[in-house]
Image (cartoon, rainbow, N blue to C red; front, side, top):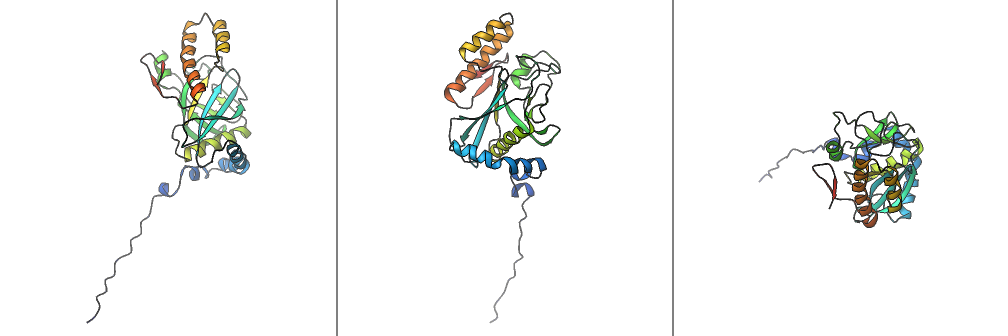
Length: 249
């Protein structure tokens, strides 16, 4: 009796390119990202190790202070709930005045609670991270027909309403951000305050701007979020009221 031999066709499953790679791999296609990794990866890893954070577990939160001209990176492992202040960078150029951005062409840097919504590895300003201005609060508080947009943390040390860094510094910030995104952090928070809103400084600035009651009301609302984050070191859970005020849960 002869054996019956059944030849089954071989089936090859070809995964789409996007399934075979990850966000970091895609970013590495760009020469400036490769340069940032070459120059800054060991610095970033060393910084994170100092704070007992693994680069493959890293999540981040960004806070900018306009008056002080500083950007702070807060960091944590993604399994943790609280952040710790990790590193501070200097903003290298400024535009506008204290107070929120309310329209196109006012040269203002926004104030409020945002997140990174774009990564540009081939920016006109070397590397850039887009901020989701205008957010719902901005839209509800502005009467302008054009609120503007395209607000970034970027290199090249020039600005009209953005948060500019030197090219050397943006390499580090961008490298932190793409690793956080690669670790699954889809919305990296960016909190922009007019100044460090501790009580004494808040009194000084609100006294100086005492005639601008709308501005003081806006800052008072921001300060509630500032106080909550400084106390708890957790990402804020925010909803927006019908008048554009931030409500902190």
